[in-house]
Image 1 (cartoon, rainbow over the protein chains, first blue to last red):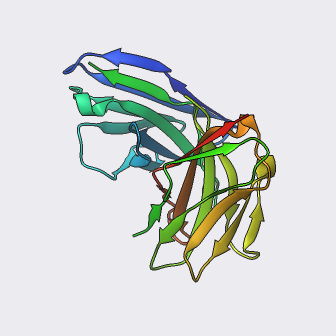
Image 2: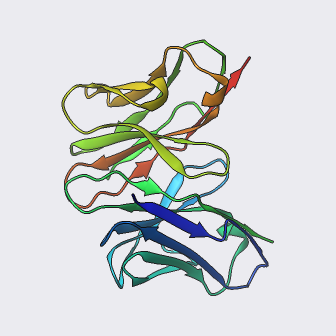
Image 3: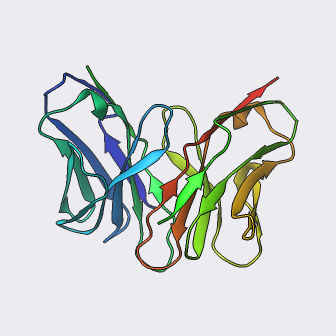
Length: 113
Length: 114
């Protein structure tokens, strides 16, 4: 069966520090991968998605970037965190095809102080 | 582009009472519709989905939703809620062709009290 992992689970970082959040998927190959952010009191906002290694699409211009160095690995990064980057970050995957359910990871709670 | 409106940010209800969580969407093309549930500090879990066919869809944990194309709605219902149903519920939409990106509503917090 497929499993999606995210780490760390929680993170507290000072403003201006770098960020690296990791997401890995097991039990599938060539998944579509997604990064979402959930800010307090708001819905989920799609940040990035990827259909293959090295292929990244950005949905919202911002202080973050994403990379996909391996088929089942998706990384969210920042060179300098802002207070507004605080939130709950969720990674998700789907298979390829006409329709595939999105499966979500457990999330990372990021607090920027 | 698609958009989703969840009209209620919070819905308080007593245990064993029925509940309806409202969702309206906007789209110029045909869509798929979803309801997800999120328990505190966890990821999202799919409750149910509408892809095509019967407009009444049944999901996990006794939830069901009805797709109403003329009213562009996809309301979630449960005839009798439990304390354990306390969670955040998200409605989402994606177009039904091409690469699927989910657009989420802002969520409805269901608070079930004894």
